[in-house]
Image (spheres, rainbow, N blue to C red):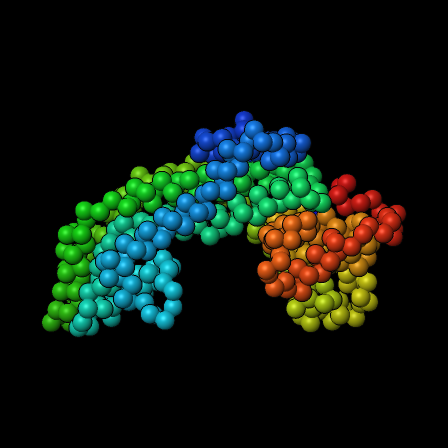
Length: 391
């Protein structure tokens, strides 16, 4: 039943993605295309003629990193970082938490005497800051999607990773979606670097602190603050509609919903696979009837559920590890090697390149996977089952 549900979702996903034509990403820039053939996809990744495309994709994270650092420096200049713990390295997320805290209880945030209350009022009044928060709401997810997808594709061209046609379409669509959103975020951060609204921020902030510190009763002050903050929120919402990121998300709503369903459907299966895996950190949480099974039976159950999860999300690190580990126990290296290599690719480790792990302290999983890849092939699988890579 679970496998049927997983395969049904894959089929539904392929049908939805088939609406996209051509090797273009959702933002109209060059991409892989959701209907790309596996051979074409790997040829693009491998070909020197397509280095420009790969170089642009590889460069997106560093471009965003520079823009985020520039934004953080702007917040430092405005004094916002004085609200943060000086013992910790500041981040945009820390500033945004200050904003969330101020908006959750504006009377407490703005009524106290001193510069801190005034700074919180300025943070709450900084429309560009609030827009950046909306624009970057999925930044970590998009960076992760791009990095993992490219790592697996490169593993398939220079390592032992095996991909199916369905996986190729899934990964290509996710690369294009993540890259499009990252380009939109890059454009918005560049546009939002422009200044000139300091006077308006100061005016709104002064209004907030004046309302919070007024002599009226608490209910009156809270109502006044709510009205003032609603005005700022309306300006924020009006401006958001013109951002590259908001417009792209609106045009890609079906793709975004598809990606969300991937996680919603695959994660429970992945988590169940980890519970079945007898030597996982959560193995003790297995139901009693599962705990009574032999090690081999639990490995088979974990392997099945990991396969089901990966039929939906071929980039799930824990599901890949579970499948590699259980398959190695049950069927040996010939079967497990492609999965161990996919796991290492997602960790940024290449068995043929010692530079990727020489200066690195490998964890238990990484060491097992690397050892498996570096030992020789000892004949074929121990059962008559066809290799997993020939699904």
